[in-house]
Amino acid sequence: MRERAPAPALRRWVSGYTGWRQDAGPPGTHQGVPSAHLTFILCVEGKVEMLANADPARPPGTFDALVAGLHAAPAVVAQGAPQAGVELRLTWRGARALLGVPAGELAGDTVDLAALLGRRAAGLLERLAAAGTWPARFALLDAELARLAAARRDPGAVVPEVGYAWDRLVETGGLIRIADLAAETGWSRRHLAGRFRAETGLSPKAAARVVRFERACDRLRTTADPLAAVAADCGYVDQAHLSRDFRDLAGQTATSWRAERG
Image (cartoon, rainbow, N blue to C red; front, side, top):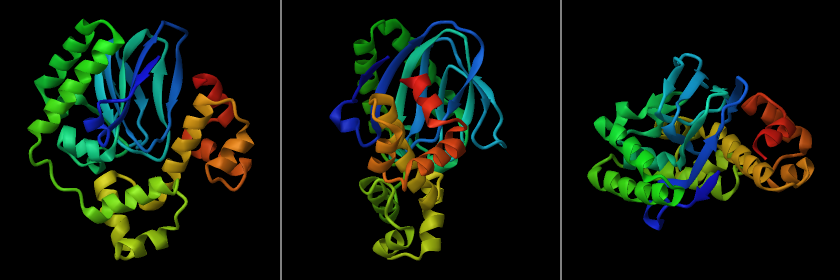
């Protein structure tokens, strides 16, 4: 795996790039866990087979380029076939700016990139494959995403109160009380929940949980800290609280999740 931050002008829309290559292995499955970012995948070799979306009403499918919306339950992805590609951590604001749709329209679903970008999606995949190296691919993405943003002259305005509420959830690690958050926006809790879900795809309460969970996942993936320390630092009441979130959101234990991605 190779990781790099996007160009500074893109970071409000995309938080990071990860290039990966996976050799063939025994058939199995991988849990697509909730995150505070949409998943944007571009394959240069192989395809991604979604066996089950987080929203069970959404059909499975096989994709060489996809965008998966925010969700608060695990998805199931097939493993075993060789793959290589780039994954982008797309922010909910980036869905509007780069793809022209609110993140709420993609919630719990996996959408073929061609349905959002048309023929431009195939051209991007071809150029990524031809680039050959991860630095060249990341530079190509910087240029292509900047062009996409420039082409979306009017992607639709983000409601300021929704943007404020999301930023406060991130600033507090998902620990702010939703009643206090609503009061800060000047809206009722019910009105905030409706507008927030329409834009992002999650309720404020679910988003708070996912923000905290993503922080814990990042710590588990990049450090050897004990589970109890991760739980305390990420705002969980105790290790058992963290374990319940992994059971509900990842469908597996924190220990097994870390072993897969360590």
